[in-house]
Amino acid sequence: MYNEAKDEYGKWGVDTEEALKRCAAIPVSLHCWQGDDVTGFEKNSGPLSGGIQATGNYPGKARNKDELMADLDFAYSLIPGIKRLNLHAHYAISDDEVSRDALEPKHFEPWLAWAKVRKIGLDFNATPFSHPMADSGMTLSSPDKEVRDFWIRHCKATRKVAAFFGEHQGSPALHDIWIPDGLKDTPADRLGPRERLRDALDEIYSVKYSKDHIVDVVESKLFGIGLESFTTGSLDFYIAYAATRGIYVLLDNGHFHPTEQVSDKIPALLSIFDKIALHVTRSVHWDSDHVVLFEDEVKEIAKEIIRNRAEQRVLIGLDYFDASINRIAAWALGARNFQKALLWALLIPHEEFRKLQDSWNFSKLIAMQEELKTFPFGAVWDEYLARQKIPGADWYALVEKYEEETLRKRG
Image (cartoon, rainbow, N blue to C red):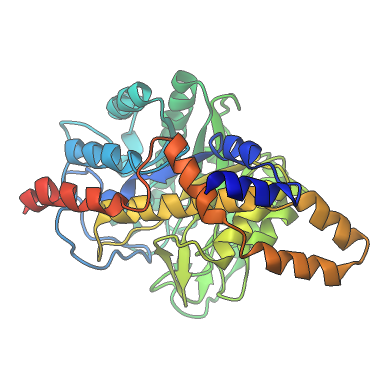
């Protein structure tokens, strides 16, 4: 079946062997927090806050580092391609309670050791939510200097950890700052919070690290639950800030209005920035963080990465947390679907389509685009999985076995 698909795509000038090779070389960062509903390892962790919710109570949630690492190992066995792991700061490993503004690289050395054995690169996030110092809904833009200073210290600490990862793993660690800051109702002042955020970020980024070790990004959001009327860290604020400070923007495709397309924003930003970052998720109406499916916008995101040969310029991470289904299945399903989207995009004759667009031959372009939809993509996908030694369409049977033997015993 693969040989027949190879011949079929070859008639359109698509080299399936080259597509398989390119797909296998694209790193995708899996998010640790799907495994435990964003709980983290803090001794006194409370409920999620900052406009974040994980709904459902499917049995078998990871309760500690050993269970989470074991679950990640199993999830990775179901996912093709180059792997990375995206950590949040409240997954620090320590026998003692450590304040978030006092985190150090030593609290993440077990993660680095775990990742090195598996040849997995690490990325890192500040965690300015689900904490008493974030109860007001404001962190880096808070009018309370004590609150702002706490989160400035926290973000400085997390950048130090990210740079530590990058120095010791041989590839830069992406460091992401997302804050929940906003207001429930119509604000009396929109400028003041953004000036405070600007100054706080300037203080955080005043500490310089090698770009060989860290890639600094800021992540916007349209609104949060309980913070519906105003978001300090909006996209326009962060684009302006990143462009004038020598850092980068992260686009989470669940953080926008339902009619907006992040796929369109990717080439817009690539025309200005040498890098951008992504959190790939799935939004449903006004909510984000659903498991990624092989659907149109995900395909369009992959197309913009591939057609612009931007695999090294777009830093790809996943971000969703569904507690209503098997958490490992959610990890594998979303990651496999984005890999599927990347491979699908690699099997498009982009240069031919570009020539048709530039010559205004839109009739032939749309006709070819539609015909391509029924090409034998599934055979190429199956070949990709086989070469990567990853289970095929029967992968869920392995998840069921793991659930029965491991997850159900957790109570």
